[in-house]
Amino acid sequence: MKQGDLVVRKSYGGDVLFRVEEVRTYNAVLKGTDYRLLADAPIPDLSVVRDPDATSAVQQVRIKVNESLRRMRTDRERQGLAVEEASRLPEQQQNANYFEMPGKVLHLDGDNNYLKKSMQLYNTMRVPAHGLHLHESQMAEVLYRLLPQIKPDIVVITGHDGVLKNRAPNEVYSLSSYKNSQNFVNAVRIAREYEKNRDGLVVIAGACQSHFEALLQAGSNFASSPGRILIHALDPVYIAIKSSYTSIRESINLHDVIHGTISGIDGVGGIETMGRYRVGLPKPKAATGLGAVSTAYHA
Image (cartoon, rainbow, N blue to C red; front, side, top):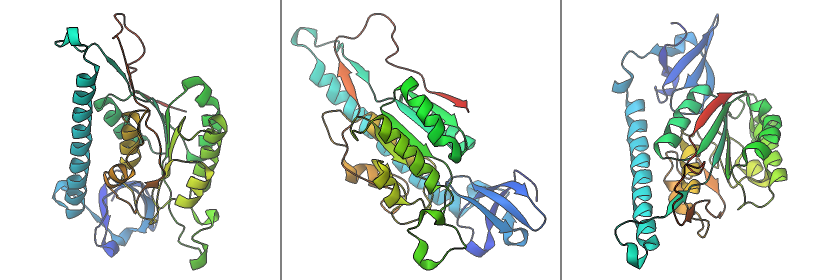
């Protein structure tokens, strides 16, 4: 067994596919390929996977991912048709000359591989986004500096988290029982100091098993994880895209957005929030920054 190998844990019935990040004397540090999970396991408990596509864990996740992406694309197609029809002028039935301004995303991620996947999806869905890979402990400080520069409509604060193994049963609601929930809470507070109106800046925060209640109380609009479960790497991205393409005149449909995620209502929850999408007329003749390209960079 070596760094980079794909493995599953025998004691968990091979329910999650991991990539080996580091091999130590008796155990290995693992990172989920689909779920935002950082774990360690005894080496004898690990089984190397030669064909990940043949595993039930991967197959089940891909079915959910494909369904989530299909729903996302269908929503965008319907929205585009509705906006085009509504914006047509009587004398210009053949050419709708409106333009779109989806909400701009600032995405902070504690995992570089997940950041790359997230930025690819933003690009595919034509969402203007800036992505940054950095450690969860740095997020509050970096956010304080970046918010006035980028002026996003939506902020995603995510990475790795989890409930600590060595804790008392009654300490599940203590922030000290989580790997990174305190760091996420600190970052959310900075975002709320910058923009107190929850409709002025949509904040999406958390990762696997994060302290849902603390993140909401700190000021996030959407957070993980009500059921303290593993969330898929793209769940925060799905919500950000939904926020980006929901009109500023409409509230984001809570039922649709939460049940549209891969992890569902035990993975993500939130509060009523207005969208960040705008339509304009007429379409600018010269090139502008309205359709900004998604970019990713490192701290």
